[in-house]
Image (tube, rainbow, N blue to C red):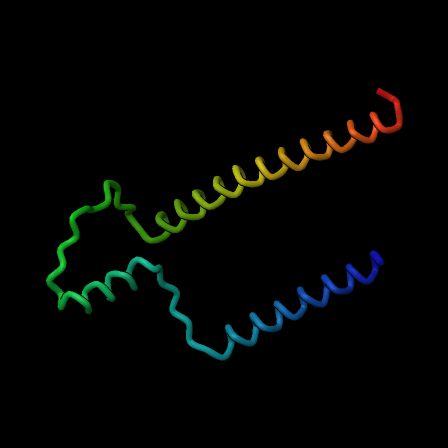
Length: 107
């Protein structure tokens, strides 16, 4: 059973890499954020008369710094979510172990 799962995982990874390589080599990609797309849609809908009522407090000096801050934010969020998922998984395992010990009369 374990070997089948490993082969299946390996197959999925190979398919993902092949699909990524194909798509990235056959198309022209321009990576952009959703903010600029939203601005374009709002500008089209309002005919260019829309004035934002709020502006950002901090403007990063370059796009690289902005990307770094976004990646840092994503990493911190992932760590927090991972911590709580691990915590509750361990809590459930402890409860299951305690219930098993009670059934066996060891506690």
